[in-house]
Image (cartoon, rainbow, N blue to C red; front, side):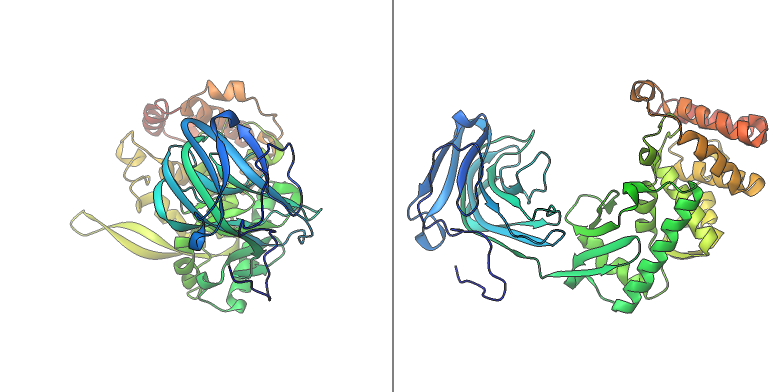
Length: 436
């Protein structure tokens, strides 16, 4: 394994050529590999194999043929930059690994970041990579070579060799007031200036959400990272917002055309869900609807532009999928008539089917009469009610909808039929009553 002198590995004995103790240890220490066991360690055999590593060198092996296990070797690494970005990698082979996470790299704490899982049988060396973004203030991490994982135990054979930990120099990083974009360099097709302008737009979106919730913000106001990841969705909210790397390049391309990015605005909206004040979800029958509703507030306030796919009715009554651009409140048209679950094709047509965008349209329609201040008042009260998960789990979506409606009518000082027609409520109830 040739050493990169400009960015050296921070792992000691990563090629496994020096002797490693197979004795069970209670802690990981700096500069050596320690076997720290794990769940059902008695089912595992650990060995330092001769002539079984890369190019017939030595390697580490974890063997559990008869029972599932979750065990690991670990090495403490010190002197890292707090808040820095690092990348661990290893050559891994497997044989007969069945179930669970299989062979993987991870950090040593519950639900810690984990590399991809390697299961089944792989006679050729595979590369596992773990990106590490959460280096604590003391600059120390514990890197683990693992068979199995928390609630994902495995059995089989796993071989590890050529373990490396380096500063991650493959990243593109730009920071604004509220956000930090952290993605692979090869996923960025536009200039720093355009990225900075887009992040400034996202700062404005954040400020709009803050305004809607009268000063409440997620994560104690800390900067929110937007991070490229290999995930099974377009993106996930949180900190970081995880952005599927397969969609980033194309999404950033549309920023050239003035797009603010519907998907990322939506995920930022999720970050302003009731958990930011440990508040009740007894009214939140569908968080996807409310993420879009929050986004509409920002779009309208900022006259922002989004480019997305719409299902547009044709002259013959059929529907065609088209790319459309919406500016500010024009997005209401999408929710009213240009998706499969829009108002005109569900509630407006008397159809009790999935109606997420239709209900978003209805909420915005109420705003047209009573203004955004109504929702600010409603959210201020709802976000002050402590969470009661026992109450929430016994409510279906219709009951949550009714609960939310009670706050709307209270603050608008009107009856329910001023907000929805009887026919609309009948259709809404028919569907939401079937949804938990």
